[in-house]
Length: 99
Image 1 (cartoon, rainbow, N blue to C red):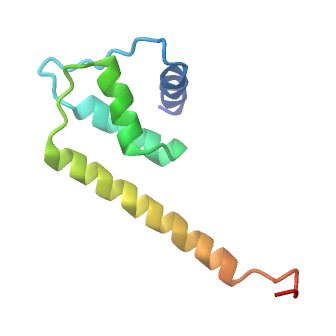
Image 2: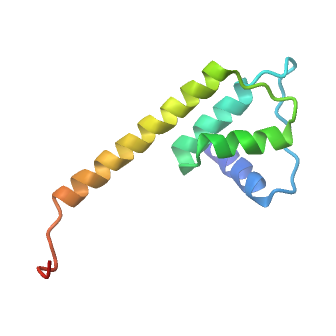
């Protein structure tokens, strides 16, 4: 799975490759799974990933509830990252006293 995610990320950055998201009903399950992998592994925003998927497959259907769930996941990841940075700054040794 990590090699697949890396390969898909590289293809989306290149922009000229065609990515097939196979779902007979045109539903958004494969695209949403890709979006979660890209968020967790590469910190790529959900909207950017879904936009790249929509370019690759224009018939992609992302329901409103699924999009909201993905965006809530993204916010939770962002909040966790901010809390870790805050903890590092709070416990850091001040190197310069020139404030």
